[in-house]
Image (tube, rainbow over all chains, first blue to last red; front, side):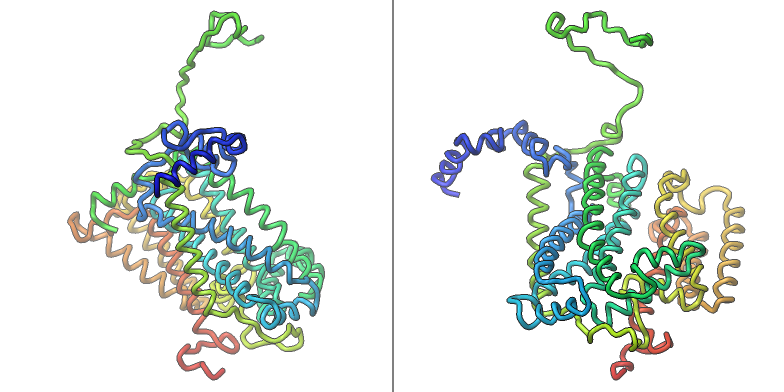
Amino acid sequence: MGASTVSALDRIRATRAWQSIFRRGPARSNRTRSLAVFGNIFFHLLPVKVREKSLRVRATYYLGSISFLLFVVLTITGILLMLYYHPAVPQAYRDMKDLRFVVSNGVFLRNLHRLAAQVMVLAVFWHMFHVFYRGGYRPPHEFNWAIGVVLLLITLFLSYTGYLLPWDQLAFWAITVGTNILAAMPFLGMKLRYLLLGGNLVGENALLRFYVLHCVILPLLAGVFIAVHFWRVQKDGGLTVEEVEREQDGGKD
Amino acid sequence: MAEKTKYEAGFGSDALKNPQRIVFITKKTSAKVKGDVGQQLMSYPHLILRETIVFQILTIALVIVGLFWDAPLEQLANPLVTPNPAKAPWYFLGLQELLHYFPPLVAGIIIPTLVVVGLIVIPYFHVNVRGEPLWSGRRAEKLLLFLGVFGVLVLLLALFEAWTVLIPTIVVALLMFLSYFAKPGKDSEFWRTRPISWWVMTWFIAVALILTVVGTFFRGPGWSWVWPWRSRGI
């Protein structure tokens, strides 16, 4: 970066508007770097300092970050898809056709959303298994491990509720098969299925309910649990690194 | 202030009159200071820069794959035309495969509930937290217990003819059994030192993986066994 660019940045930083937003100088000292993290509502969930060992790729493969980033990608593409979608029978299916043939980049948008959803399920599973094998569930991380299990379930339900929305044969029968399993639960099964589907069969009520679950309830729940999950990583003293050391000593994996 | 505390400040509580700072040292330490810390780096920029790079790579990869791999779209949903087989999304096909063998109550409700509860309670069991090697101490007793549990499990699975569960179970159990005889040494050190939680999780992953792969690729009409490279015409 040229000296002129740096001085230009400095001049922007010196403006009153900039300083009213960031309230700190350039991040050149550890004090201002700390302020950059806990002075920012989005970064304050992160720790101010991290262990060098937990930053190594092999310690985490960044699977937690990847899962979260996929959630962000899914939120953005999901909101864009909502602009073209009506949760009604059979308009939902026509909207899929419109996405394919009428909407600019509609195919790409839907591909991206579906791909990210599949990868997110994989990433969350892999994240959980990786944390387990690293011993990351051990105290003081036990509560965060439980939060993680809840997040896995939310991810699965998010993916599953999204599965019905295209309203094609694939969607209809996958949800029929899945909700029939629910009906096997003693006493509550039939009632729960009725609650979920808004009827005894997968129909337009079910489509609307899955739409609300998929676009409002589950993403909000996921957001809250993700925030707690991140925050607890910091409060529980960062990632577990003992396992990494042990394996490096033994030279085995 | 009715209760008398252990710590007495000895100064007035008016901070303006007595600008004193007092440090209370309690017995409990927070989770934050436990354990060896090692070298530390500032999150800003070290962590945030790395996460940005991960995000960029991820986005590029998603865009490239998304350009070429189209999301499927079949005919309009029709409750009168049932596809054979009707399959759930891939991550539930392991469950659907279980449903083929066990009654719906067992495969659809009891087993998933047990798995979720099992996952949550892992860190609350002392044996999992200590993570001692499975075959350390009271070896004969443990071996007997292991063989008993394995025998019952195999019998149960064979009774229901749940072959796709039985095979990974036997493979993992065989490895567990062999690790009993492993001598301390370089080659078998890994297997010898595995704790019980490691074995159970590995068994769970092996079964889940086999069930999902079989459910996805090896099941055709009427949930019959098909070879994926032969069923292209169906």
